[in-house]
Length: 382
Image (cartoon, rainbow, N blue to C red; front, side, top):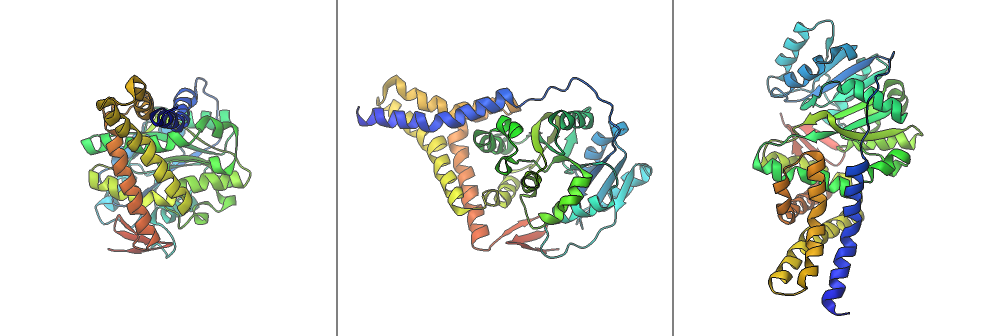
């Protein structure tokens, strides 16, 4: 066996596991919701808001389109610097029987803004189930009844719907699919449904549906008060405590436009990238693996093919390297054309990850919505 043949085999072996994981997730990560059970338990929708003047009205409109499923809606203005507070008052005034504005409490040290806001919201809700929604989330028709049905079918007390990612600008279409590419080439969602290990806990903070009594029993957001990756930390807390959690395909449940520009994508991903790993070793192993699998292999074999090396077999690692992006793009409604740029967008993701590592490791921290987060502390810059 010559060097090129050995390199070809190594490339294919490295790529097969993430390809199979992506294909497994795409094929099996579905829940058919056909029946409509009669639920006697009540639901409160909780929406934390900080500088959400462009989003909150559309979010609440999507809730009111299925208001028969909702006992109450609680809104919280997390010391916004824009017109969010006035918009919340307008919404509450128009719907006094359903909507309550929870009084703002200044965020104490050691809390992230969102976690403190969610904690205040939950303290005021009295329903059996709590549905935490980000202000930029949009519920789809029958979303709440679907989540109730899925939670009952899976027998879980914590259910997160992984949202459809809405993208508009070129930067979003190129970069936002990276989130799903990273998660669903590594995370075996069908296995997480059948095995309640803590390490398989996953959630997306845009839409989380949970049993209120268990939330209070476990301490809720206070337990993860300084976490920027609080959604998945809550899912893992649930599992660690012996309760069941699930993260379900949310394409037909909720959509969210997480970021709307190149700069906001960089800031948002920098905030969360390194904290998602917790340990330096796992972070750098992932960075090296990602660089090799999604950039070095496809570019290297493309160059080899152009120079007549490797023959037609060199197409195998090239096609394998882009196949997870193609599979996930088709499954999660991303632009298919963006997949051909994956080697380059992956480099951008690696840059973001390295920047996130530097910021968190060397105590530079990150700025997010007028607050500076560094380690376990945050301060207002307003």
